[in-house]
Length: 493
Image (cartoon, rainbow, N blue to C red; front, side, top):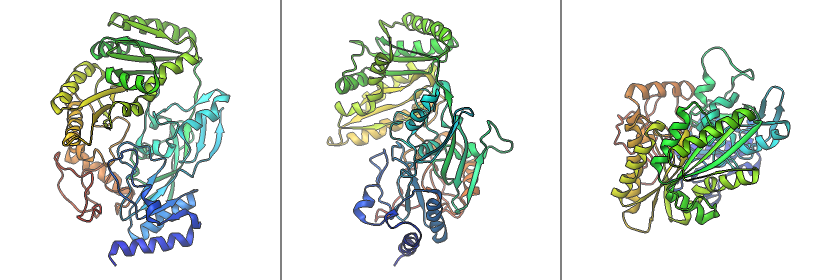
């Protein structure tokens, strides 16, 4: 029996003795159901699956792993798009989606205390009758969990005005990789000392597992106005975005779709966007009525001045939902026009939108693939969908190359390799393109302060394992460390 096999057997025995009988899964078929998250082309079956229901069970699983030096990975609904919840072949996958109670809502204090498995949208549904809501709204908010949002510092359409998850978490209860419990942050608006809470949010599960979150609630806006603007091309739409923001208007959301994304949405949900549009903008403004009316008029005028040939202002909630239906369906709708696609997630300064979108089209043409764009234009957060057919020899490789070239393009324009999807397994190899060796060493030292043996979600974020007892190896921009494996297919970390 190998060392790993012996450790897995020992951990399994311990888990079976401390957790409910139905909480520990070792059956190969049932374990295989957890072999990936939303990044479907990376798959690893975990050695053991634990269905956690409370903090004691999470702590028991982590302590068992710590005692036997076995890796563990936490997972919520599995909607992540960067492989952040990709399991470890010789490790334990701790599934948090059954740990899902909203424990406290305090409208007067504008906060709620929730379990990590609570679905994002459920917080707003619960607090809306009191006039409050939870602002971060990933496109998957109907199914993604708060624990996953915390791990990835998730965003969404309305984060242009209200910020990402980090701006809406007041405190966290955490089980650290050595099996201890800590609380980071306070329920008050601010806390003295180092911002440990800030370091934890967005750490992608490498610093431990959040078992409770106190989140900030916002008052429901007095007024919401939404309009759709059709343009001849993305250059004109991008210029309108820059004009609106440059005028000092900060809409709740500005979303853009190009012709290919519109085609997909029309095929899927018949959203009836302006005929012949090469690009559309969905612009939403919220706040006090008089302010919103003024900003709506100004934003509409900026769109017309930059070539909008049709503008539709939603008269009521039904029309607002109709405008949003095409945008919110776009990712899934792409399946109507392509059998396979890669979702990329890069950020650029919004003033670079026209040039970057043109260059992206050229990259797609050069690679013999298509790219559909649907994204958060207001903050330059791109979500290009690289379309290909895996049945055609060479197209998958061409799509991968184009996807990587898009990341390089974002960096060339002073952007980032990810906006809201996280680094995960998918983009670890790109980290040296954005950060120096010293930058990465500093990040690793923070991780080592929490996880000196490197058992908490190993193989994510960093391009190659170093420090803290991990195998040192110099990394470079050309490293492809997303799936380091032995010939037997077992990951090496």
